[in-house]
Image 1 (cartoon, one colour):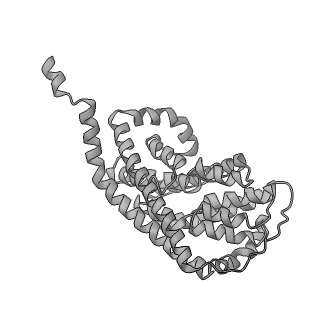
Image 2 (cartoon, one colour):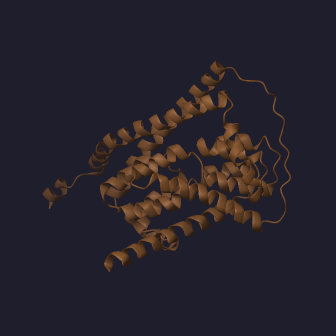
Image 3 (cartoon, helix red, strand yellow):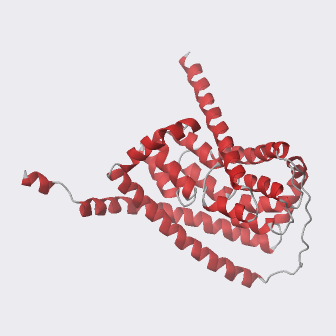
Length: 318
């Protein structure tokens, strides 16, 4: 009896084993995601310096009349689309928007932001990058259009005049360097921490319990129970920070490509429902409308995709 007990690894050994197994893959993913993030943010630095982002917004500003937003709000959406929610908020506060407009703009931004980096993460898990970009962009405008029809009131906005002074490039570069270094440290810490946490939770059977508890919620959204942990990670921290865990799970073979595609359809529209939701609420967006609208969008997307699979299987079986 004593020999069998000695043969069983203790908690310390199990933890060390999990950490050793995680480090190589997490390190590789961490370097990959940092390269993309730094590269994209550096490109955006040049776009800002040469004031090119407004040209992108001018192309889509006429469309904003159909979704209850003034043309000035287009710059906020474009900033968030290519950068992140922080960039969108910075541009949004320069326009005098009411609560209704801020809510609509927030839904659009949270549906489609940081597209280059987040699409790269979802593509790495096996999903189609083209489909992700099309679906997230389309749903951002579709949900905004729907909100414009159902929310009472009209938008009255006036753009705040800008000073017109150009910040020196070296000053912009220093600010970019400091913020980017801080982001790299944060991302590295979260990627390694999440990867180790995921391995430990799997080792001790916690993920199975989480999947069981979330089964009714995930079933309502059309998601398989085995995506529970990834769903939690995406909802709490988002796609970029949860990249290592998502990529590791997709490569492990524990989750099929179809299940990954269904999850990506859902979390592409609805993720980071703590930090990002708090940020847009802090400038005036109605948080529960923003959350429920995106849940509705993700619900529609997943069940539509499940219908696609059903039709494809029927055709193949004939």
